[in-house]
Structures are given as C-alpha cells and as structure tokens.
Amino acid sequence: METWILITVSAAFLQNIRSSLQKHLKSVMGTSGATFVRFGFGIPFALFFLAIFMYWGDHSFPELNRDFFFWVVIAAVAQILAQALLVHMFSYRNFAVGTAYSRTEPLQAALFGLLFLSEKASSAVLSAIAISMFGVMLISVARTDITPKSIFTSLYSRTALIGLSSGAIFGVAAVAYRAASLSLDGPNFIIQAAITLSIAIILQSVIMIIWIYWRDRAEIARIKAAWKTGLLVGLVGASASFGWFMAMTLQQAALVKAVAQIEMIFTFISSVFIFKEQINRIEVIGCLLIISGIIALVLGG
Image 1 (cartoon, rainbow, N blue to C red):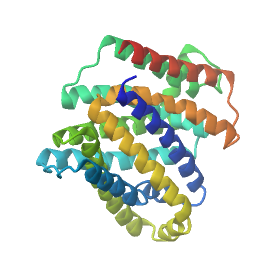
Image 2: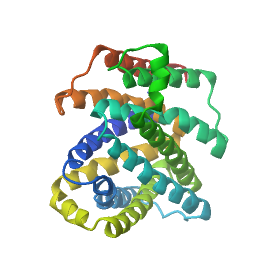
Image 3: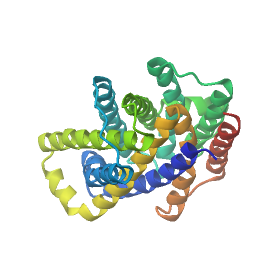
C-alpha cells in the first residue's frame, strides 16, 4: 500500500477524534471558541513536529517564497471558515449525519485542483468518488421517506447547504495547502508539510483570537476553563493536519480526500458508542457505499 494512503487513513482517524472532542466543546462554548481550540492549542504540537524533523534529518530551512505565502493564507482562512461551518452544523443534525454533508469535499477538491493547479482526475477516479458521494446522499435522507426525488432535494435543506458549503471551502483549503507545500520545493515532503502546518496554524490562531476578542470576549474565559480538553484537541488536530499535508504533498488533494472518506466509518463508531446516537439500515448502506468508493479508488485509481 502506498505511503500517502497509510498517512491519510491515520489522519482520518485522528480527525474523527478531534471532531468528537469539538462536538463536546460545542456544549460548553460557542462555535468560534470550539473552532479556535482546534488551532490555538495546536501551535506547540505543530512547532514540535517541525523542530523534531528538522533536527532528526539535519535539514536546512527552505526559502519561503511569494507563492507559498499566497497559498497558505488562502488555505488558512478557508479552513477557518469551513471548520466553523462544520462545528455550527452539529447543532442541527446528529454527529454522523452532520459530518456526512461535508464529505462532498473530494469531488469539489477535484474541481478546484483542475481550476487552480491543472490537475486532472481520470474517469475511474471520478467514478469512485461518485460512488462515495451517493453513499453520502443516502445518509442525508436515511431518516425520511426515500425516493429518487428526496435524495436530490435533500441537498437543499438548511443543514445540507451548510454542509455542502463546508465541503466546498474545505476543498479550496485542501488544494491551496497542496500548492503551498509544493511551492517550497524541498527538502522533502515531511519538512514541507511541517512548515506549512506551523505557519498556517499560527496565522489561524491569530485571526481567531482577534475575532473572538472583538465579537465575544467572554468566550476567552470559556476557552481557558476547557484547557485540558483543548490541549487534546490541539494534539490530535495538529497531528491530523500534519498527516493531511504530508499526504497532499505526495498526492492530488482530490485523491487524498476521497480516501479520507474512511473517516465516516470512524464517525459512525463514535456516533453509536460515544454519543449514543441511533444509526439505521440506510445509513449503514450509505456508509458501505462510501467504503466501496474508497476501495474502487485505491484499486483502480
């Protein structure tokens, strides 16, 4: 199995843990606070990853060029917006179904990759993504009367629009992060990913703390009160992002995010065993379709 696939699966597992913890934080603080925790508490871990791999490999720091800063700023801001929408969405649907809507990211990442980086996806890759997408659509209507019409009209609900917007912006962020990391041109994919992560997460933390201080200063006290959970969110969040950035330096963002649909399996496990939410048969079928799409992508992509 290729390295980028192993890294992606590991990152998806860690991201599910982070999302579970953020859903918990959403009960004790607002959307902006739960979003900031993801970034602010991740800074020490991101810098640790960079320092340890720079020292371990005895590498020199690559030159940070104009293209790098252009893409990393776009990616950082896009990720904040997408993450805020995802956390906000947890207020409307259960954890598994809410997360499913944002999983449209691979298809949208393929489009943005074509537009911004001229990266083309083969028909086999697009077919595999489409299988997973149909699984997502099934999950979105699993608790209603299922008809061909309802599957498509469900995409116009309030929750769906929030989720689809989150997926689109996540797709922009993924492609921009890949462009930023590749613009460093060495010394290797690990260092490129670590530098991209460190600079992005610092920028995101500064943006978020300014926003919170301006809009809701009381949120700062709630963030401080939840520092223990915040540190754990920071650790798994930074680790997951490090994995994403490494994988996307090695492979197209659309393919990485397509394999990352495996997160839905981890999400369903969390939904049932941690949040005690009921999962019905249609949601299970949708989940199996997502997995089938991933398998088709890995074997045929």
